[in-house]
Image 1: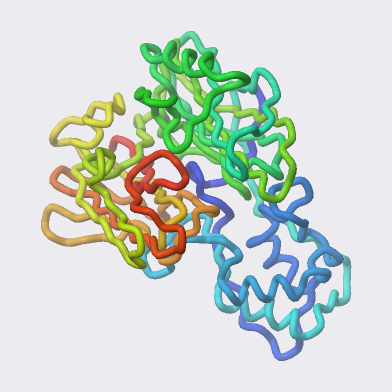
Image 2: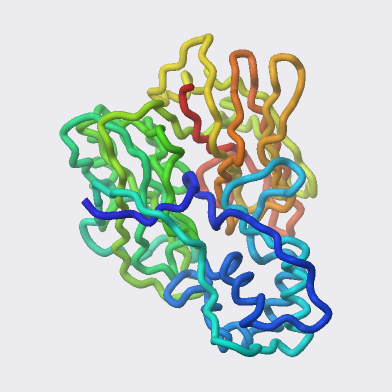
Length: 431
């Protein structure tokens, strides 16, 4: 058993608790005075030597050398890449910059990026607490990305070693080649489907099999349940206290690796994932991907070529969706669930997305709104206050795409990066 540095975040949320800072003073702020803390809170999670960002921002020398670039991306709103709009609700781990933080940073650059007096400071990320890790799974051999450049989606099948049933309550992903690992998602495959995953692995040369979108092989279909994931900037992730995801003996873990080699030559990778695992929890949870089932069939979700704005939306009954998706999570007709975290997923044509809760009484509550979708910066957002999903409530999902590019073709739902999706990943528990 070893220890996991655990941030108060569920699944793919990033960062730390958000606090504001004072308005920019009259004199130019300094690195040692204010800026190191701002960069640590909002940037240092990715901009660390050896991580996926192209340069570090931990020291004054590193940050001052690219001060102009920092100012331009902050003014443009492309960095830090927090996707959730600020007019929906509050989230744990919000690493967006407040207006006063932006003003301080821009004033620092405009003032010549001074270091300031006093002890030299480093930009340090958020503090974390500790949780025990019980199960560590490693890729059985190195994998060098060989898929269609620059994106290679590869699924690696790993044996689940526990002989007794229990619950995953947290996880830690340790990417090996951080410069090319874009994201890691870990899925549970049910014991009855284990051989199917092994067959897909055997059908392709080398380690694992190609798995754009869903962790299934070409033309295949199998029940999978999301256990956790990693994206640039995440250090650790744990589930809300007292909740966990059920895993039975004989299951397999499918590690979906998304490699991006646009900024580097392919190199060997041996990513690891560790889980916190216990025999009992207070409340069983489910991590599920919610969408309109009809969109996944044929050409129902059409995004015509040449259209700059195409919108599809639907209201989904959560108990019905859990049943048809074969999640293995049995929900009684009169049972309510507690929503802890959620996110959105589209592909490269996405412009914006929104998920809301339509209550049975006719009212509506925004859950997440992403006004400027970026395929390269996807996250899951842990709610600062959980939301009760009661019988009769529906999950409303809305996505907008821009398919007006010069090489546009009619586009539909599909697993490939050139196809599209519109779904929300949710972490919910019983009450």
